Amino acid sequence: MHPVSLAGAVVGLLIGMARNGWWETLLGGATGYALMWILYNLGELIMRGMAKMRGQTLDDVALGFGDVNLSGVLGLMLGWPLILPGLLLSILIGGVVSLIYLIVMVATKRYQLFMALPYGPFLIAGAFLLLFFGERFLRFLGY
Image (cartoon, rainbow, N blue to C red; front, side, top):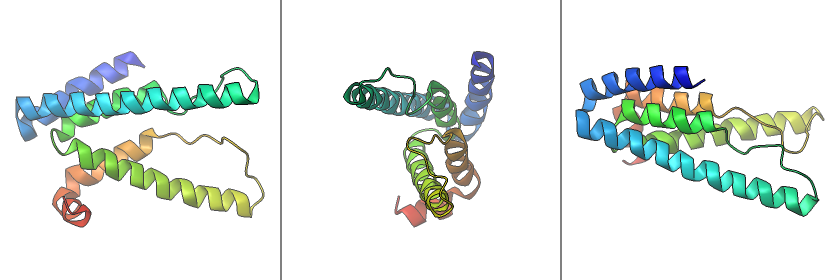
């Protein structure tokens, strides 16, 4: 997937430079990557602790590293400081969808512990909403 990430970074850099200038573009990309890298490592630490408490080996991940790369690309597109509400909006969308999914799975008696949902679509949805409807969402978030 690294060629896709690299292609995305080139496209993100071009879009970001056209929208924000070079400094805001690079700072947004670095911030998006760094914040998700921290969350990735925190998730891995939590999963290791849970596996150790259960006496099992670690075979699950809380967040994939592709999400870290994607956040860097989206940070390039959104730029600084728009990447911050972009990640916040992505987390909120992911939380709402996950809650609805959880309710449906419990109601249909198909719930299983540690069910995984891909996070990339929520990251893309948050960035899409800000890129195309940014002013409205920023006012809504009080940003």
